[in-house]
Image 1 (cartoon, each protein chain N blue to C red):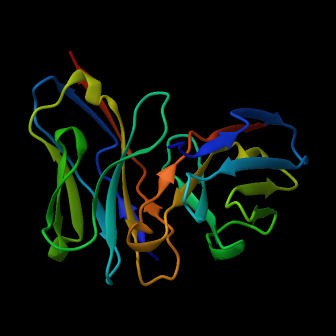
Image 2 (tube, chains in turn orange, yellow; image 1 turned 120 degrees about the vertical axis):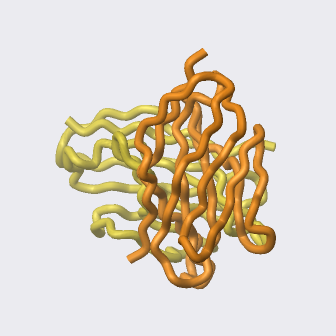
Image 3 (spheres, each protein chain N blue to C red; image 1 turned 60 degrees about the vertical axis):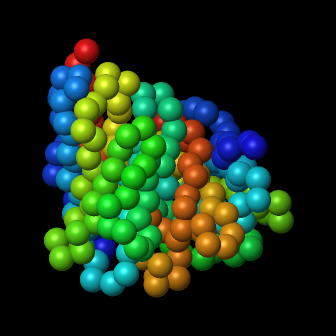
Length: 115
Length: 114
């Protein structure tokens, strides 16, 4: 069965620190990959997505992610975090050959940025 | 452009009761998916509707059922509520065409079963 692992459940950083959140998935076929962010009290918002092409994708708010097929990974990065990045981050995978658009989500990483 | 909306925002029900949650998809979107997000967990796929038909189902029992209407809005019905059904229920809609794998989420309905 498909699954998504986010190994960091809680991360605390100071402002201006660099961020990398891990995401690994288990599925051998073609995948679409997503990172979503959930700010306190708000709904899930799409940060970035990978469907095909350049494995380094850039999203909103200075976030980027790199798809490494050989490692089944799609890690999220930001060079310098801000206090406003405090949120929960979810990695999700979709298989375009599955016949549905269902997402498999990881359990999320809570990021707290200290001012 | 109006995003995905859900109603109600919060709901408290008693074990054994039935509940209906509602979702209006984003304008132009024809696919609706429902997810359950338990506390401290990522969203889990319940099912998806496309052109008023169920188009995929996750590992949820038959007492979770749904509908999609001609205007692409949708309902999630849960019968015989159990305490473990307490969660945030998320609706997501997807546009047709090349962007159909993108999902846009609503704010959710927080269901508490006592």
